[in-house]
View 1 (cartoon, rainbow, N blue to C red):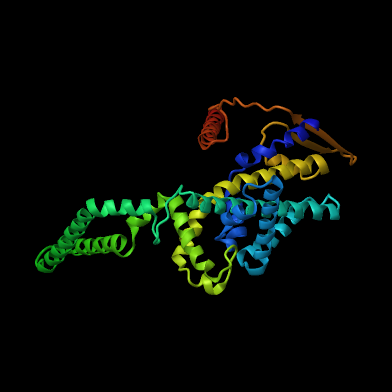
View 2: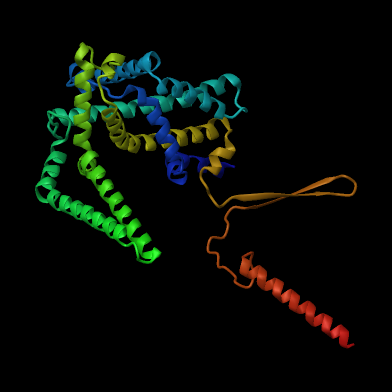
Length: 381
């Protein structure tokens, strides 16, 4: 029993990599909790004015003030966040073991949910702070327009060196499509298969040309690809562009004026959210896994509960036990406990025995052959 409790502490740092499939759930949950707060305009300026160069107490006070402000903003003007925060608190309260007393279960379960909410907001503060700080100190470049400097220069290089080649290729595809259509129209006496091939070849080439025109003409595919490779500058540029609009009314940090938000086009908002999410999720997932694993370890050792979740999450193949029950004719129940502290790990497959399809078919074939031989011997006798 002592060994089991000691093993449960492994959840603190091993829960996440032993249960990596939960990363998707944690990432989506944390992103949903903070989604209504994006972007945090003026977070870096607020830090410079209230905490920079001051005591540790001033930093803690600034951080606590921002947490409280963000929580109030969630319930005052949030949408998805306002639903997910209570859902997280209630869901993790329900997850807590019912063996714990009701008051302690409420405190421990809801406290677990609150820890995740605070962690999500902390990750948001860090990522948004880094975005504004990197632009302010010149670590990344911000265009006056709506494109990143690096992406723009790369796109200009593409237009100068390769755009003509692509345009020439699309022109040749158009000419080939027209030639194939003309050949199909003139092939009146040709075989049906030849006319069919020429007709659908012309249609395929027309479709290819239209797809190329849309991808490289109407839709800025090349420019978008270049922007993806320059995410920090893209984030900083989109952040600056959105905050210029949102801070027009005077108040900046946490501005959620519907009229000001209406001035931001949907493409900019979606692009910014998707870009910032790539960094946010990378930071949020380890935090969520660490909090959940620590909660399991503390629950097991302090309250002697959550046994199934705490030990199954470690996926340890050792310490396996089974109970074999036997009911006697007089009604008495005998229970035999069988357990192994360590199970074998260096298994070697025996091809002569096993549950594989080949082994089963081989045994069935041998059984039928034995029956045939036995039946033949009886007939001769």
